[in-house]
Length: 173
Image (tube, rainbow, N blue to C red; front, side, top):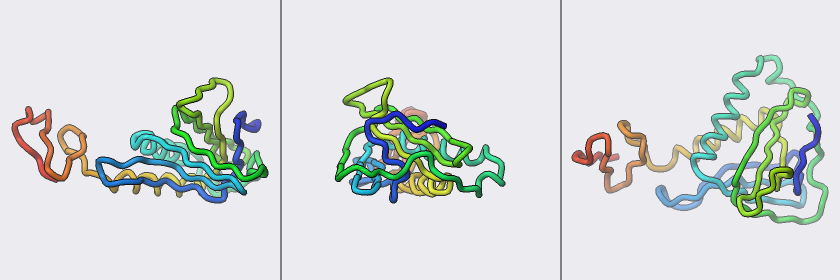
């Protein structure tokens, strides 16, 4: 796989984590990356983070077991530029798998500055590190409000007027 086309190419970050800030119902979500002297806060919606985690797990599950354990050389080196702090909301995120290096490629696009040809930031994760990120992201997403078993909407601490119950039966968490 060729190197990524991005304004900022982080290579393989030394740290990637998923986190939520705030109280359930009013949380914001982000991926925090550190690569060399650079860092990034990539803001996204809870559903985007959840789907990203599921897709990483789907890619991993589709690979033969012998290739999961194999680790290759990442296609790009770690960030070697100067101190850089990037902070943006993800408008579009693409994820791919390079079988030669057994790494996942993330291409993120800033919602404020869309460019179809060049991603705002790219980074690579070895498959094992991607699987760990997926597990962490699912835990972050699950730590919020519980979902209604009828309609799937979140249940607030004061209860929930479920549309599938015609709004007549308040459900408690």
